[in-house]
Image 1: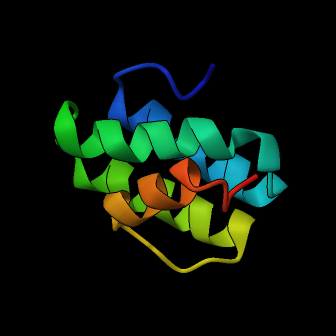
Image 2: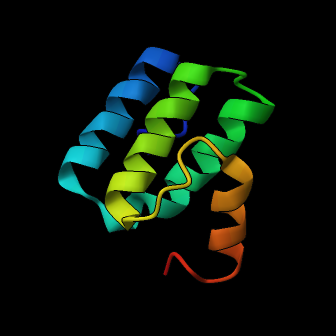
Length: 79
């Protein structure tokens, strides 16, 4: 998917596009991306873009707190 690459600029744009579409289907990939943005990509712009998209799409407000998103995902809150 658009979110699986490593190019920060492309990832940020993809997050914005998905945010604009309010794409529920993208939520798992966005959670995966926000975790990757911290662990491997180490990129705050990507982290912020993924967090913003998740906030908009889900109506939750965890922002850049990737641990909260993971917990919400694991507990079924984001289904």
